[in-house]
Length: 446
Image: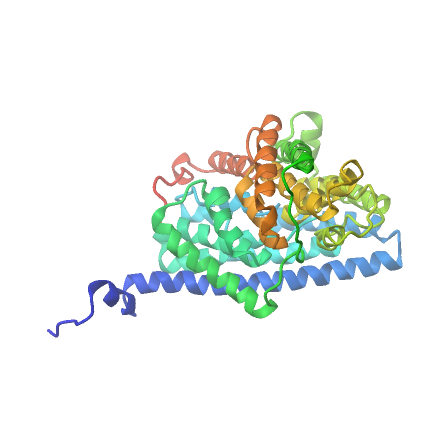
């Protein structure tokens, strides 16, 4: 037998048939596919919003008809054919990582649900939902990795984590945010064996997005600093207001997501499609009051506020209301971009009280604070906002605002919205299956 002249570690790297190479190739290919899917979702989401905007611009009353009908259709399709595609999709992935049984796991994360998520998200945006695409990209990314993971089924939990992180990285074109999201939000711990593979997947997704779309920042580039002094009052205000409202928003979603008690809860359970239509009507009315600014992801409005543009005073509060209604209606759609838009809208309303602070800086602080208040993941929120605006000079004020907001949020809502909803999903699945089939995995593999 010929003796290998390569060191053992180098030999393992170049062994094209070895398990190590197959595993790394699996994560690499998965990252590339997730990046391409994220680009496709971004394009389709923009087209859907443009379509709705054109219709609403031509006929002012169109949202009163189109939005309730779209919500009802999306809710019916989701419940009838694609149960598990509701909401942002992030709670489903968190829950799926804790399930051992592959058949039960597929009820939350599967290629079929991933494709449905894309189509139903576009339907919602085309009919005026206040939803984001980043959360759905997480579920689509996890579904992609789950499909590839059939090659090595024992690595499913690590693959789902990598797909989720890659989804955020590609959706925001922010690779560091994807890594932090995987650490802080998806796993709440980070297995050392998973770190390199998750990093490979995130880098592949981020580079794919960057190669196609260029080296852009999600909300443009902001610059400036916040010197120590009275201007740091803006950090305190952003943290308290963002944390309080973010916590209330989360508590509202958890209340509906885990089963609303009383007569109203019984009505929602018996007539989910009618409830969705009612939510759509309220979203349409909010849109008319706010001059049509609250529909869609909120990306354009956030960018306008950061650039110093004008916005209706009601944009921030009504965007919060519209996002809450869209989220509890049962239609697929995320809350990341709308939450950032709510934060920017709150800054717009608070700016007259803090006129010495530039509106762009205040908006960045409020975006990070409100998002941290919603998800109770301060590091993820701070890094996402910092990367999206490319304003690294504000990183310390952003982190302080996010940490403060997360602490304030916990006074209102004990747990972050994603993990609270994931626990509700696990309880529901446990009631429908034998306990052993949905018990949490003891030692997830990378």
